[in-house]
Length: 177
Image 1: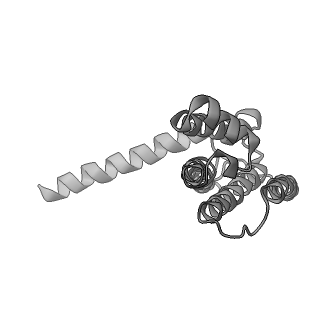
Image 2 (image 1 turned 180 degrees about the vertical axis):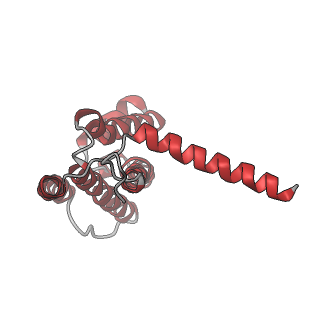
């Protein structure tokens, strides 16, 4: 997997892109949509998050979803902007905690919308998320210190993937002729 330049292949980057997309889908889109659905079913007081209550009351549901998606995007991009490519497992642990928090948020919103008993309270869910971020990034830091991964820059991997796809398409058309 390691090339002559000392960098690992783009496989690691693709895995992190998948984690990023899953985190955005669960924590961003899934949680926002199920929150809006739950508020529609139970009313604004059914929402356990005071920030969400404030946003929906003052800006409306569609603006809440937009704000939630923008904030989620910023939160998920933050480690990529702050840390360099040697912090692979720290970032991966960070993203996994958002995936778990998003899934938990979706489940709690659906349960609340159906007037079912919640598996955990909103306060416990937030505490679990914070604990997960601390534990998973700590484990990631230990792995990063031992593994010394040197990940290729994301832009180069994206260009490489685009080139591979274009070559595949060109070869496909050449074979048809």
